[in-house]
Image 1 (cartoon, rainbow, N blue to C red):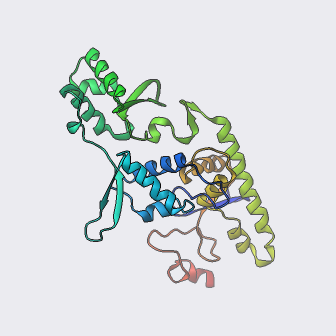
Image 2 (cartoon, rainbow, N blue to C red):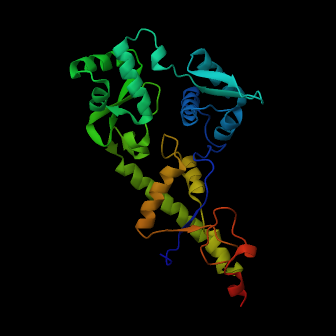
Image 3 (cartoon, rainbow, N blue to C red):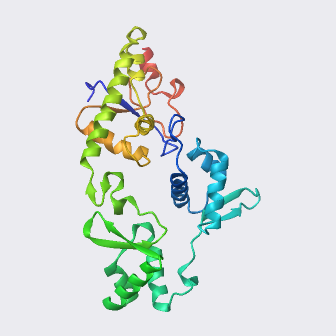
Length: 298
């Protein structure tokens, strides 16, 4: 694909969800709370204020604190101090099935099985096998636990007519929901097409802008045409095309389709003006450790 004029660069991503830029409208309290709960699920051992600040840099500190206090008062999260440093951390409050009140012994068995399945859930058939309960009894227990909002059933993209069960406060894994490109188990082909077009347009514009630097040489032009998947994700997020938080992983699935179509190419970060696509896992590629350096001088 060397003939492609549009290039993305592959780089390590530290933040999978780029924060929204300052020009975005302020998020509602519900959106901030939802994102905070999602973050708590991503870090089950707890989050500190530094993690919150990194993930939500444009949200006022007072709003973040008020949201945490509200979640504490609703008994959705716990607050604790890290040993030694005394730094404050917050984590989701999850009550073990064995300590639940108003739940009989058979319901506790089912709850424990569902709890062990995590956010990928578990099929009705597998619960029946592990619990040794007959189907009629199990159905009654599942219905009762759903009514108490202790568990929930989620439709799986792998089997549209079947559902998996998980704890009520868990966010379903992408393997269950199909990720960002599925809604009610239906693939959002129109949305994917729009994002596909926008990603290509963004890279085209970057490529055209890079050509204006032709006087600086071909290597400068090439390197100036790069955009990382994280940078593209931020640009798309700023455009407000979608109503959910796009991740770099989401954008990379779109970019992959453009690569497969031969419209763009992916390149690792290159060493100064070296045309060899070198990678380094431990440190940045530099002239002093470049195996091609002497050959280039010769």
